[in-house]
Length: 193
Ligand SMILES: [Zn+2]
Image: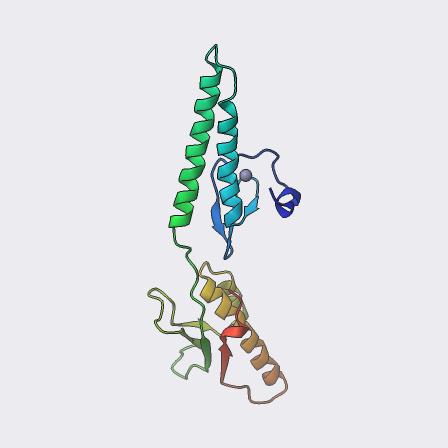
């Protein structure tokens, strides 16, 4: 157990990580029960720990069957951990595609009654990820934009933050009686995903 893991608040003492771990951030694994965060080496040590306990039980005295029970339980734990780690490592991490560039266009609406909106176009590095969002629009109203900021899709959330910034900027122009810009471009380094 490394230092950060030991000192993590809320860590449950002696947690056997009954549900295993799930991928967390880019390189970590997280126990959903106690919140322990391990890196890849930590997972290996977690398996080794169970193997060590099992090996120790070989030296218990034979006799009333106690050794066999302990051995069986510890062997089962070794298998459980190996299986969980094997599955974890063979599942590719699903990472949100990061936009290269986002173009936000202000659509003022028209007399026929179409509402004022922001039209967003999202560009990715080629090849474009299969299910990635590449175009959407949102009404030019603070409430609608804030709603989008809590969307379950990380790309939409991230772009919504930029729409919010652009919207605020446009409002400040309008308040000063100046003409607000009609479009704005954001690049990859301005996004948090
Ligand atoms: Zn745990």
